[in-house]
Image 1 (cartoon, rainbow, N blue to C red):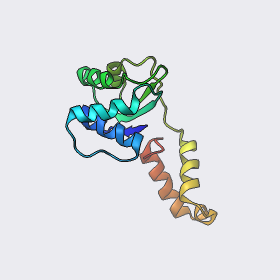
Image 2: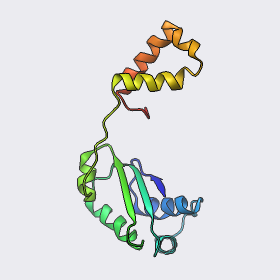
Image 3: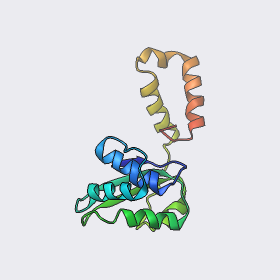
Length: 146
């Protein structure tokens, strides 16, 4: 299951609606929390799951504990992977050992950009387009998603 969290860390929205939506392929309607918890329990209880919480920015420990409580029904071996831009989130979640991803080097970033932007090799021969492309790559600071 994959849930993009971004700036809003609402246990009801993230945990119940988005997780259920990720598992079933359809986000449930705006139900009361107890009904959403029931649906979530039915979805994960006794099952092994991998849940990716992507781009988390929440630094409130109490909200994490509420969320984790709701996800404890999975079978042994279930995992939750959290991606974040800050180390503080890793500390708040009580992660085992954070893995820090480094940005691409200038060369790697340019090769990726060139491959994606210049699908026909002719464009990479145009010095004007190459100059603009290198400016874009520099502004992205090695972050491929940018």
